[in-house]
Length: 126
Image 1 (cartoon, rainbow, N blue to C red):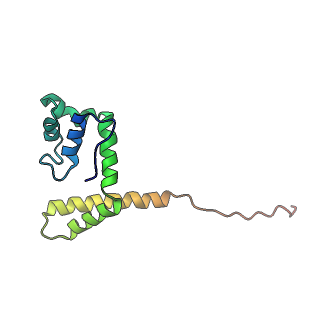
Image 2: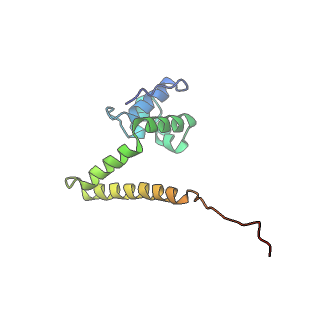
Image 3: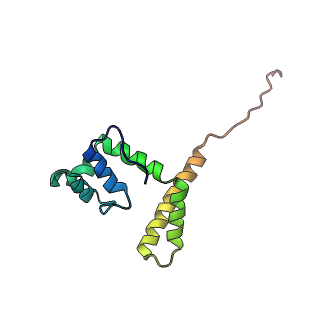
């Protein structure tokens, strides 16, 4: 994982983000445990994601976009979909996510403005 240090983060905030976003962390993906590890109180840890502080939104988004590209995400989802050793529910969820991503991409392509050429003869009289 890339360096998550950011000048606007306090040490506690940086510890939370590192614990939450680093696959090598014991609290990876667990907001509550990451917050407790960073030193937040039980109440704050329970509500941190619901509070959505600006520092959290900015840094999680930045890290997520730096960490993995959309094509890598689709590649992982495709591999999970075709992996018969994965539980059916995991394969179905991966299929759902891939379909949503494809749909959003397809809708975006369809929403692109079309070029229309008009030919008007202004020299003829009626």
